[in-house]
Structures are given as C-alpha cells and as structure tokens.
Picture 1 (cartoon, rainbow, N blue to C red):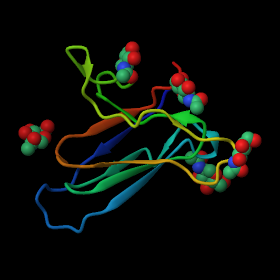
Picture 2 (tube, rainbow, N blue to C red):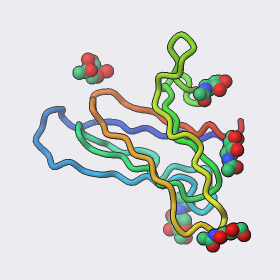
Picture 3 (cartoon, protein in one colour):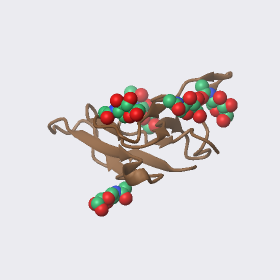
Picture 4 (cartoon, rainbow, N blue to C red):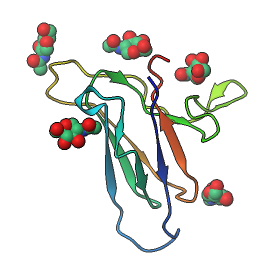
Length: 115
Ligand SMILES: *[C@@H]1O[C@H](CO)[C@@H](O)[C@H](O)[C@H]1NC(C)=O
Ligand SMILES: *[C@@H]1O[C@H](CO)[C@@H](O)[C@H](O)[C@H]1NC(C)=O
Ligand SMILES: *[C@@H]1O[C@H](CO)[C@@H](O)[C@H](O)[C@H]1NC(C)=O
Ligand SMILES: *[C@@H]1O[C@H](CO)[C@@H](O)[C@H](O)[C@H]1NC(C)=O
Ligand SMILES: *[C@@H]1O[C@H](CO)[C@@H](O)[C@H](O)[C@H]1NC(C)=O
C-alpha cells in the first residue's frame, strides 16, 4: 500500500497568525488515504494525525523518494509515528502530532505498511 501526503507552507514566514491545529485522518473508512492529503501550515502550527483503521504509519520521506524513510549514514533521521494498530471494533483512536518549525520546508509523509 502506498500513499503519501505533503505538509507544505505557502504563507509568509514570520507573519503573525494564531497557531492552528490541522487534523489529518489516516485510513478513514478503511481507505489508503491521508485526508486531507495536504495542509498549508505555518511555524508553530500542529498537525495531528488520527489513525482510524488497520495498522498504518506516518513516516517522513522526500519528494524524490516518496515511499522511503529518510536516512543519514544508515540511521533514520526523518520523523515517524511508528505502526499504529487500530482494532476493528475500536472506539478510541491513536493520535500522533508534529509541530511545524520551518514552514519554508515542505514535509512529505507516507505509510510504511506492506509494499
Ligand atoms: C468516509 O465516509 C464518510 C461518510 O460517507 C465520508 O464523508 C468521508 O469523506 C469518507 N472518507 C474517506 C477518506 O473516504
Ligand atoms: C502492524 O504492522 C507491523 C508491520 O507489518 C507489524 O510488525 C505489527 O505486528 C503490526 N501490529 C499489529 C498489532 O498487528
Ligand atoms: C527504512 O526504510 C528501509 C527501506 O524501505 C527499510 O529497510 C527500513 O526498515 C526502514 N527503517 C525503519 C526504522 O523503518
Ligand atoms: C474488541 O474485541 C476484542 C476481541 O473480541 C475484545 O477483547 C475487546 O474488548 C473489544 N473492544 C471493544 C472496545 O469493544
Ligand atoms: C528553513 O527551510 C528553508 C528552505 O528549506 C531553508 O532555506 C532555511 O535555512 C530553513 N531555516 C531554518 C532556520 O532551518
């Protein structure tokens, strides 16, 4: 399963806005999706991933290699939620969040499950 998303920043850095939290649903209705697939965040904003089905990850990649983790000298240096298992009968759902600290740099994510 392959799907990826981007947390981009198209607004001016340093502009005075209230901090926001963006919610991205992972695997809603059993689909292989992040919904919404993109958000435009600013410095200090939080992106909260809610895992709604199965057993997915939110793993940082690059644009050039969208389904690979980011490694430096063999060590994974990108951020990663780890596998978040959601039982079929779940009534509460795992959440994993990141704070955007350089909105000039687009962040890309994919799920590491399976192929
Ligand atoms: C899941 O189903 C609901 C209700 O039909 C729909 O509003 C929503 O867009 C669906 N989400 C995805 C990611 O398909
Ligand atoms: C979630 O998937 C990972 C990778 O396939 C696997 O190692 C792990 O056991 C799974 N977790 C559960 C609870 O099934
Ligand atoms: C990083 O990706 C490589 C290639 O897909 C994989 O072999 C390795 O297990 C991954 N590392 C982690 C910590 O997920
Ligand atoms: C979900 O099903 C498992 C296995 O039948 C059970 O142990 C667990 O209590 C159930 N959880 C909920 C929230 O119903
Ligand atoms: C933020 O990202 C931009 C674009 O990648 C980069 O040029 C800049 O040096 C970064 N700023 C900081 C403080 O890391």
